[in-house]
Amino acid sequence: MPRIIPNLWFDTEGLEAAEFYISVFPNSKITDVSYYTEAGPGEAGTVLTVDFVLDGQPFTAINGGPQFTFDEAVSLAVECADQDEVDHYWSRLSDGGEEGQCGWLKDRYGLSWQVVPEGLAELFSDPDPRRAHRAMEAMLPMSKIDIAAVRAAADAA
Image (cartoon, rainbow, N blue to C red; front, side, top):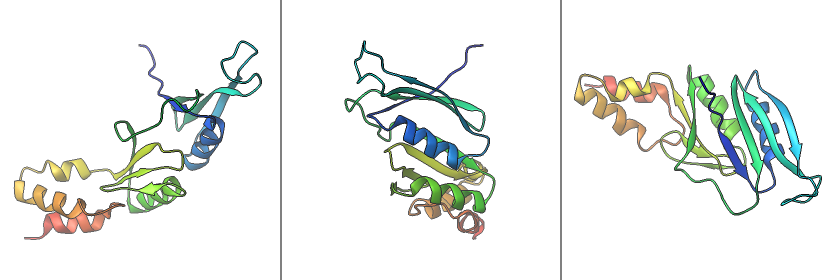
């Protein structure tokens, strides 16, 4: 089975971003850094790619120039076990970035993340449509998701 490795396009900050990401997630490391040669197209000796692993998932950061930027069409989801994890990853990833709605944020490099608690999707697909509606209605105005508040709204009669 082939491996799927997300490639993230940066202007010039691929190494800086990889170092930031490995500081956020446990069991993470940079595995390789390659550099532009005299053949270009980047300046010889500057970072071309950075291979890194975030808790077992490999990624590649490419310093390809300013032609492409991140947008919300692609995001990375962080499924959290509890509110402490939601709070931790929200705080770390949004630092220097911008908070969005419904657990979405952009980090300081413009990459979109979803920081969501486990079990949230099950609340929204609850067999009781009123319960699912109440959960969704509670979450929609939130930036960082408050698990207890969403569950309390779902369980309110």
